[in-house]
Length: 509
Image 1 (spheres, helix red, strand yellow):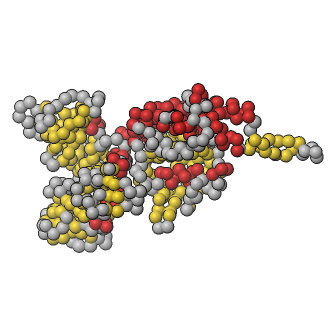
Image 2 (spheres, rainbow, N blue to C red):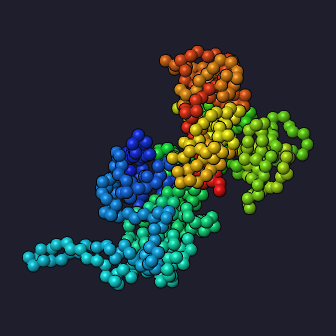
């Protein structure tokens, strides 16, 4: 093995269910003692990946190596791996001690014995009562519940039950502990407390933790390494600070923390244009290249305009503000574009402000030219997709597998839960071949102007721009000229949606 400290390695792992690819070409090495978090939206493949590591699912292709040995087809009970699930599955009729000791009482351990022929043979025995007691009390001490060993499970709080589930997993001294959204059933305050306790517990135990969550705050708080996933694929792997400060694409930027993301153009040496304003930057890209920029809300500096605005400044109007305890969050409108800013200063609603962003705080990313990606799209009250000034019919059931839309336009999940998607933030992806250009205005979903045409050998790559400066890149065999006034059309089935955050935030009674 190339890395002696690598405890588990996933090599080209794929998992399909019928025609549905859930995990696609997953490659990852995890170091001994590392706290790794799989982070992504519901349905991105993170839990399926965890289940393949545990042995509950078998990869369709690829290998899983543990300490250099192939364990791809080894059953779960023969792997030195334990799992803590979101539903703790504790035994209500047993007290804390017996819940933790349950697995030890069933487990057999090998020992060597000399038979009558003088040969050394391997036998198996159960743990003694003293051995079980020692291991259980050590595990309870790690989770700070050694004084509650005789308590009934039903009398414990959610946080205490979660710790008992962890103790039951670590008492068997696994090499790897898998945690599948174990804090999901806790309230917000307890969840934040348990994040810190889990991190401290990891340091005490010293074994490898692999954690699954859709909560970016959990990932940033606890992890040594974060693996951001979407649609079964790894988007980025890195340390929390690196992923937060240097996301590789718009999806990662949106999923890790709050972000302002804009389509932009390089207009000069270390100069980028977005929000119809030219900014200095520190990333060098070719002239006129289309890029995406990320600006974190805390990096947007607001200054009140006390008199007349100066020419050349970027100005906006505060249309909303929320007090978040240690800072205010402002929504500033620049024309029809939104800028989210955070500041400890208290500004008045409807006041005019100047916007400044330091060059090194503008993160520029290469634009994804394999598809049109719109990170600031949202769903309106009629379940239509809105991209800037363009409106598209869309099938919102793709946001939740097995769902349907009722007569009142609520999304109904397979479990009967109801969701109101009005103003739900999404990332919309449209293939380059899935956009149709129609001559003249008002003949499609949006009006636009042809900006540029590049011949690619057997087709043209056409860049069109709407009035609100939203760009579409279209692959077509038809010839179009810069300056042509056109309409853009997209069939609803050609649009792929990814919900920002978890769908539970849109649940209604």
